[in-house]
Image (cartoon, rainbow, N blue to C red; front, side, top):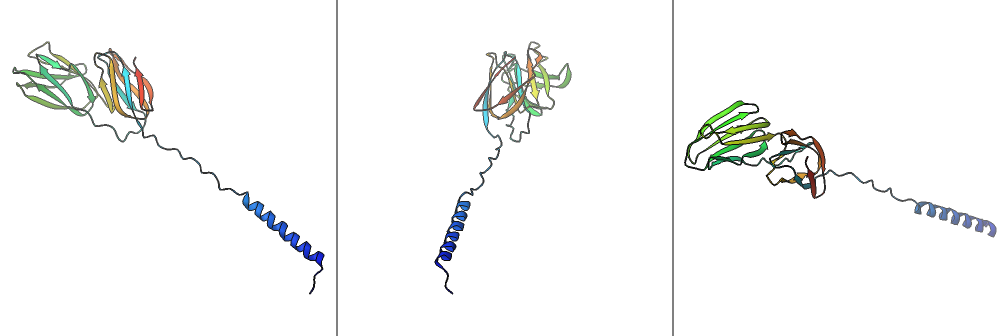
Length: 207
């Protein structure tokens, strides 16, 4: 069968138009952009603070903290007929070591809060006594033999807790990023403040 020239040209033209249309349509399709996924905050910072000397400060995380730092060794020494240091702070439920670094007999009396007796033991020269203090709060330490000897222990449930030295400067190292409640006491007055720990360093001014 023989087709007229006009028919052949019309068929070729139609094919070219269809081909061009298909090519243009396929070229305009782009893959969907990826949606950014939120990442968990896992950074750590140094918290540098200022408060009156003799204060006790704790950071209580307002989020689940599964990598809390281990408690530091707590101890009070008896030397020169003094308890040294006179104020320590740590975590409830940890051991406290009471040492004697002189050649005279002492004893250690510890009361909880307003005067609830916890223990009363003798500490011979160069001896020591270790006791686990379970509850958060204040403990008063004294020696019946030398009545001028006094010390204070503050324990908290928080993973970060510290007694502020006389110069008023304190530092918490390796603190997990996130929101915290600042608790503790300044000159007998409770602390109630919230902070956000971010970046490599966060400053904290109290009160």
